[in-house]
Length: 426
Image: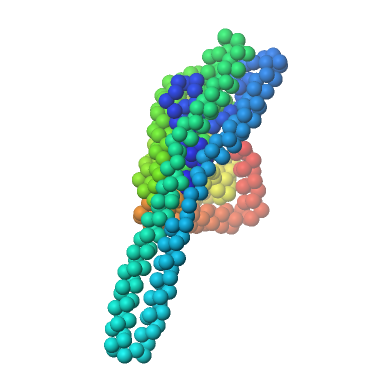
């Protein structure tokens, strides 16, 4: 049975207008959106602020009721399972009889043994026929349970969700001034994109470049923001298109899983490819953004990568201690500084090798957990082997670096360097 979550997300796919429930709105508004909305649209008076908060809160309650109603409607009927159970019992009976016949051959005369072998052969043929009947009966039961107008149910949810979302949008627009409508539209688009990005299968797929720019501290200069706006606009258009493809893959996956789950392997793989396309699009534009602000900031790329891929980009204790030591103006030992930089470079290279492999293989473990594709087990073992190899290489280099530091400046000084480095990085 396809999960209810998959069905509900697939139901968001629509060809309706921008005001209706579309692939760009797979998640409802929440109360957490209230304050950012008020700030972005610059709603200054408190009565309208309270009205917006109440509208979004009411939407949340209505959404929960809507999901509960449609969840009960999407529950497929149990159907009559007596046919496959009867065939299963008959197959089990034949298997027991074959076992008894084989046991009776011990000490039997050649004539009796030949007769018994012939009877076993007939029983085995009968058992095989019954096992095939079990599989067929179970498949027919599954088909009856899952062919009960899933498409109609999803469309019903889609229609009701579109109406609920449209009602919220119109109610908020009513209380806005004409000068605030454009800002409201821009905020809605950003929120929609963020929610779509959060529907991720793989690491890095949920990275939101708009949110990244807004959250940079200290903030980018006005000139830098204006300079990168064309790049951000191009990313928005391209990543939206990539997510449209991903939404279509979600819908195909829900339909295939409902009708015949055992044949959904290719569609799962296509869904994974769609996720990678979203992630790779964002990473390409992230690099372009960093190039655009290189003269002002050099931390944009690594700030984003630490959020998207913390395992590979957040510094280890050794890296923190090394960097803190190198940043001290009173480091006079040129050889020590060279060794520290060498260890820092080796740790970084080991992590980068692991990250490059991770990008190629990320998501295969997801398919492996679903058990839907041949060959995935071997790929998953390769992922685990690569992960261990990367971890071991980084760990070994880290331990060498820490050992060197401790031998030179002592244990307490190393711990102090890690603590100071972490505090400085915050």
